[in-house]
Image 1: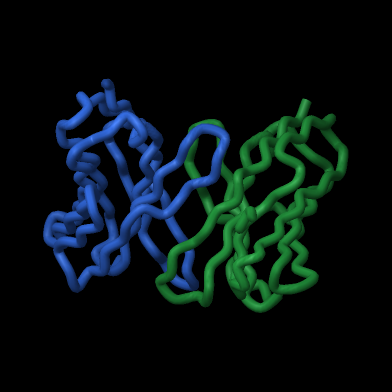
Image 2: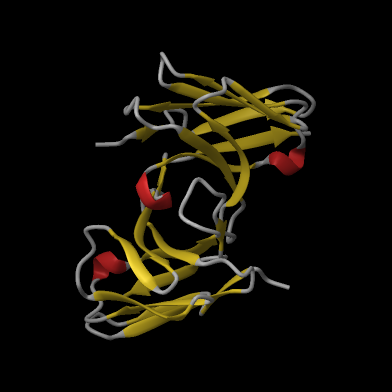
Amino acid sequence: DQQVKQNSPSLSVQEGRISILNCDYTNSMFDYFLWYKKYPAEGPTFLISISSIKDKNEDGRFTVFLNKSAKHLSLHIVPSQPGDSAVYFCAVMEYGNKLVFGAGTILRVKS
Amino acid sequence: DTAVSQTPKYLVTQMGNDKSIKCEQNLGHDTMYWYKQDSKKFLKIMFSYNNKELIINETVPNRFSPKSPDKAHLNLHINSLELGDSAVYFCASSQGTSANEQFFGPGTRLTVL
């Protein structure tokens, strides 16, 4: 049973527009959430994170929003650039620094 | 300078063979991990070592044996390879076991024929 769900396998966005990637989780005890980005033939790289004591965290073009009551988080990329085209993984932190990942969403930014 | 490196990048082998994948990190981290990305693209943790001690061991067959000779290295040895072991294996490292960013290696694509 998946604890972290990314229900959109792919997303296509025009360059300069906003990309919104969504993630749902099942356990309300999770308190640390991360987004990773992955290019083909490379390992995932950390993008941004948020603790459950916040509802928003911003880093440049990337903002993560957390809605604890809905057990939902989203990643906003504004403006989207062609170099943002990658697979985006949502993850939650369990005990002992164990990351539990979603299935990923493929983002394509068209120029 | 590569932060987390894995060798080999590709590994093709026959069923029943024994193989190893090596991982090294030069970040000075004290915690290292092995993840498996299966054909459905899910990334799942297999093992975690902190200061050379095993702290996470998911329900992985005992044909898989991690070995950490020192804090900078975590190798994965697989005995009696099976078709279902075909996957991409990622090594990662972090500082400590609290909520910290993990740095991933480039992955090793294992194909069992």
